[in-house]
Image (tube, rainbow, N blue to C red; front, side, top):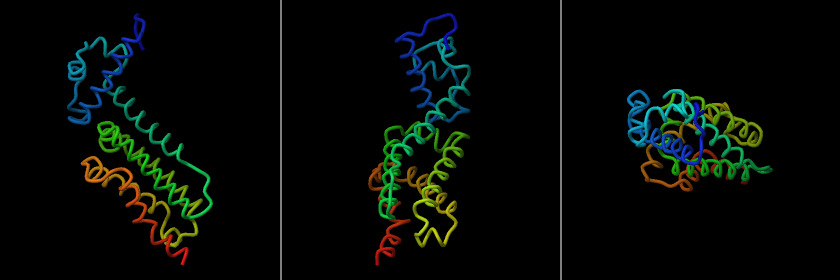
Length: 198
C-alpha cells in the first residue's frame, strides 16, 4: 500500500494500468524476461509509483496468479446447480466449461500466465481436477465410464483436454467457448447418456 501518500482515484488508475501492462508483458515475454522497468515504462509511470502498490515483481506476479485462481473458483462455484439426472450433470459440466472458456477468451493474457506460465498454474489445474472429481463422484457415479475408470484420472483428462484445446483452438480462434465446451462434453459423456437411456 502507499507509503506516505494517499491512494485516490488517479492512484487506483495507476495501479490498474500497472496490472494491465504487467499482464501483457508477462504473457508475451514471461516472468523472468520482464523487468519492473519494462512494466513502468509501458505504463508511462515511475518505479517509485510501482512500489506504492507492489513490494516486488514477484508479489505482482503472485497477485495476478491469485486473481486468476480466484476467478476460476468463483466461476465454477457460480454455475454449480442442484442436479438430479445424469443429463443435468453433464449439462452443468458443459456450462462450467463454457463459463471458464468465456473467461479465457475475455482474459487471454491472464489465462496464459495463470493456466500455462506461472508456477501456480499446477495449483489452478489441481483445483479444477478436484472440483470435477467431486462432481463426478457425487453426481455421475452410475455412468459406465465412471464405474470403469478412476474418477481422478477422468477429471485430469478433462482438465488436460481443456488445457490443450484452449491453447490450440480457443485462443487461436479456431473454436468458440460454447462449441468447445459442447465438444469436450460429448467426448466424455454423450455415449454414456445414450447408453443410460437405451
